[in-house]
Figure (cartoon, rainbow, N blue to C red):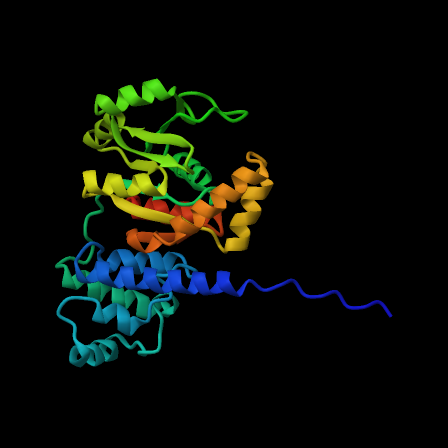
Length: 301
């Protein structure tokens, strides 16, 4: 008799880390509702669009209690008027319940259909999570979108074009850009190469009223938020740690040493996800693109 193959080992530590990150992100979402950094309608829109998002996993009770002027006493009456069970989660409401909740939230801000304002979005995440693919998808849906091109001191990979994928510059030129104040943000990534976002093209695109998407590293995202308070930080998450490892290994652009370095950095970056305004799981590119467009204030109707 052929012996049964042993089941693959279960990475319990990875599962624990993922659960801790999820709790942190949910806590961050609730805090952002309390202090007004995110609107309830924005959180509901993400939950409705992506059932796998952490917004969708929020309990309706936690969501409502995070809103101003809703306490425990008012909570019960609100749920009853909306016809929603307190056991429900935000992304799993029925169509009528979801519509009623949206109308309730809209009434709280004084309008049923508030105008959509374009919001500059900073898209960040670990290596191989698919930032470039999602950014390209946004550009294909909305060709007028300004997508930032970073300057970097790393050498070009095969197929990369200077001025299209990156501005490939020397260490001396990068120093000159820093000294001149030409960079909106910069960071040393993976302990090797410097990356930065040229300031002038971004400011020009915003002034012209264009949709703006900045695809940068996690460190740089924090710097942009400090410099531009009205941007929205979006953290792109992999479906799982194993999937991120697989994507990095199969894209074939790094050797094993570099892969190990990037995975070590990715662990640190994933722990920062709770500091972002919104987390989007990139398990399906088209859905991730749609969510990013929504977060930019671009209707997909």
